[in-house]
Amino acid sequence: GLPEQVRIHEVGARDGLQNEALPLPVEVKAEFVARLAAAGLRTVEATSFVHPKWVPQLADAEQLMPLLADLPQRYPGLRLPVLVPNERGLDRALSHGVTDIAVFASATETFARRNLNRSLDESLEMFAPVVARAAAEGVRVRGYLSMCFGDPWEGPVPLPQVVDVARRLLELGCDELSLGDTIGVATPGQVTALLEGLAGAGATADRLAVHFHDTYGQALANTLAALRFGVATVDASAGGLGGCPYAKSATGNLATEDLVWMLHGLGIRTGVDLEALAATSVWLADRLGRPSPSRAVRALTGG
Ligand code: HMG
Ligand code: MG
Image (cartoon, rainbow, N blue to C red):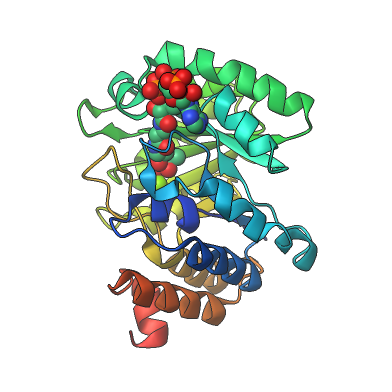
């Protein structure tokens, strides 16, 4: 059967905006996050505490966090996770009182080097003290695993390799693992095969999330395959914003509106007000100067 309720992990303000050529004023970013919370999203990834030269779009993390400080009181249960690659990033995040962080690994050697300037082994060594210190501070840790199905430089990624890195991330102490199809090449049979492989290695669906990109129009089909397997946390990006700065072929993330349309149609609760969310994506698209690629946003708003 399908889950009765799905937690949507909204990544537009981070995964989406990290990819925009046009820098947005920090006040607009803060309003975006506030509007996402007002639309009923309860996990809204806010920004990244990475090196500002690597991702200049999110170099304003220090300015953004104070503007979000009152949101958890206004919206009980709201979580505002941030990406943290290393201890320097964790120090920065903790100084803003974050309660949720995410480290981000790659299933492939090439993307580990391009994204983290480290070999795969070295990147896991970099994360180990981050996860341990976060746990000691009572901070919840998500582990992202990118390139679970294909890699722009290495091609198809062998399933045992993905399962191995996933297992190592969970062993570090990550509370949740998000399986990323960073370049959007997966099809549903591959999703089921990976989830079966992970279950065989002890990683059950309750600790997993899925993160699909819609490059080949497969994101919703892949999501449905994961839901059938019992996964109940799904990543999505409002309006379909974003890709990944080091993976040129990665077009948009699964649009949150497209996801919500499917989930509500299946009778699965999300807590999201779809009209308010689509209006938010149109508002942001106006600020970015181009329309949202989301089919549901266009259908709902005529824009
Ligand atoms: P590095 O150059 O190897 O860093 O970068 P380093 O450790 O050698 O340090 C060099 C200098 O940077 C030092 O300063 C550090 O203090 C400073 P110096 O002593 O020379 O003055 N530094 C920092 N400053 C601020 N904040 C920090 C930080 N760390 C070091 N956190 C590093 C290594 C990991 C830092 C770099 O490669 C980096 O920031 N990478 C992040 C890339 C990124 O954000 N990519 C996008 C996210 S992943 C993604 O989008 C995929 C995902 O969405 C899922 C999917 O779709 O698959 C998650
Ligand atoms: Mg993504």
